[in-house]
Length: 127
Image (cartoon, rainbow, N blue to C red; front, side):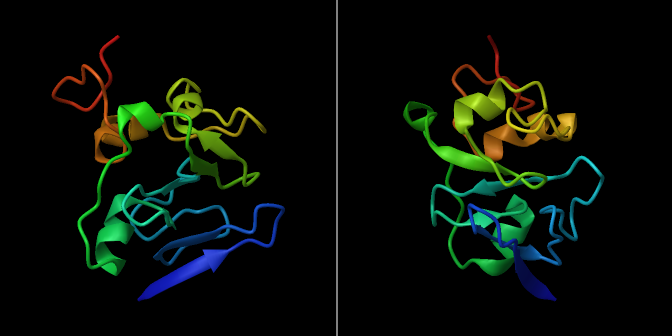
């Protein structure tokens, strides 16, 4: 059943998704480290994951272009800090504000959310 969750914090950002917890985990991804939400470039809404986005929206998702890496599009579910895309991609799977650990496996999905310059086939950025 589609539901959304919001945490009354300084950011007061509503995270959309299916069975979203206060830490931004959802029905699809709910380990202790699945605690980020991503603002989608297409609709500017924060979703717990792309599967949640696709279940609740009627449009196709689009990725953030490489030129917009300064957008605050990744939110830590632990402290509700919104990281810039470049900050998140260089964070070593940790919140740069509260140091909460993020799921390192999310790197394999970066290409679903962000344009990756020089990306290889598995979605990991080639440096």
